[in-house]
Image (cartoon, rainbow, N blue to C red; front, side, top):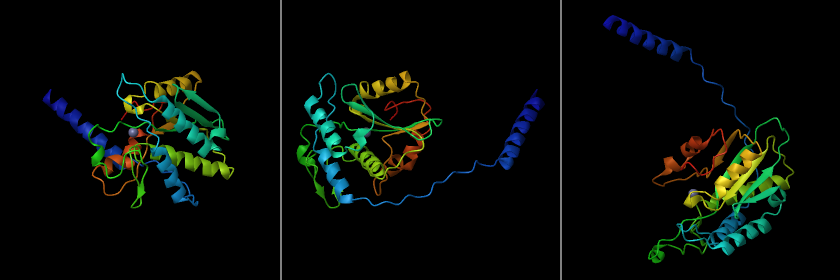
Amino acid sequence: MKRVLVLVVLAFVATLLIRTVLFTPAAIETEEAVSFKVDAQQVAAHLSAAVRFATVSPPPPQIRDRPVFDQFLAWARSTYPELHQLPTAVVGEHSILLKWAGKNPQLRPIMLAAHYDVVPVVPGTEQRWTHPPFAGTIADGFVWGRGALDDKSGVIVMMEAATLLLKQGFEPERTVYFAFDHDEEIGGNEGAAAITELLQSAGVQLAWSIDEGSFILNNVPWHDLAGSQYQRRREGLPLPRLNRQR
Ligand SMILES: [Zn+2]
């Protein structure tokens, strides 16, 4: 019996070794880098404006300040009119899903998602903020405030990038969905769930999606988590899944 076990282990190890030696990784596809001009000051001003909307997701059962969410969406429509020409569904009252149809319907769509709600400011900590959380201060080369990083930065850069490309007449090869949701910080039960249901009911099978991804940061303690590794972990989701994984 012992000899059989040893033989099995040896065969296993030999198989591993042979497969390792013979393994050839799939070629990595690379894309040509695209160069374009970004008006950094304007993007910063837009992010600053976005921060000034206190789109706070309060812990249930408190309800959100609905007019502020309406105002944020209205601001986004007027700031990014080209993007909002795309077919848009409003779901869960304050989340939006935009569809940018691709040239090749044979290709599965992708989805880029970000949330514009923010967590509350802990009462009593207001004085400890370097700049007030909802002032959208631009100072020392940064936009300061609640949501400047998590995750209005994601919302704004996607809206900026898509607008830039739309203005140039760019058409994506495959369909791109943009999902901007309003209740990620309290679980996404209204926004993300409704977007997922909408996509599933339409029979949409995504090739992949990225939600809240990703930051490129320097000199912060959780850099590794927030950087590209975080993004990679979120890629390759076979089904539309928003905000259910953190
Ligand atoms: Zn977030």
